[in-house]
Length: 176
Image 1: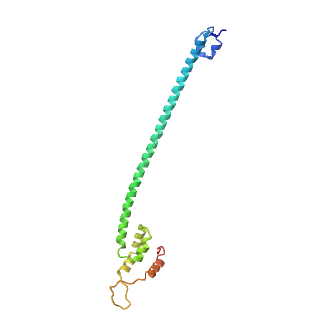
Image 2 (image 1 turned 90 degrees about the vertical axis):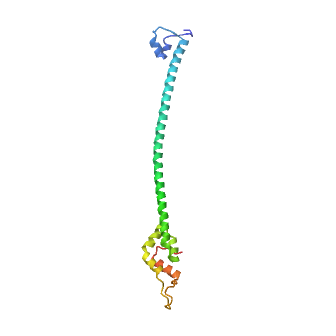
Image 3 (image 1 turned 45 degrees about the vertical axis):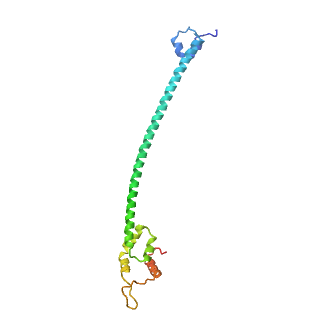
């Protein structure tokens, strides 16, 4: 055989070409190269199409996942807005309670104010409500004088003794 011709035995690597041609036909190297080149080009185009489809599917999947994240982000944003509104409402309540507390503290002895200062606003109001009757009596009723004179004068109170008495009565209070 010479270099320019190929017999049927060598063309069996290209089954499409051999099926189309008869058994006795011979191909030149250029024809074989052309057949192989065409086959490689078709395979290359098929691979490029498959790769393009896979890339498009991956892009669509990523977009779908991004849309899911956008939905989750939107839900979280709504939850945060609701929490912020609740926080604002609670802040207004706290301001109202603090204002009420200041009104309730008017006229109370300093040792009670000192005891209350260590507690949160709500606890202070609870304490004042719980002991309102007793606190009003001590702030409004003057102490009896020893000599019977000047009943309208403010009572003299031993602060330490009163603080100890209150500590014994109300162990939950902390004294400075």
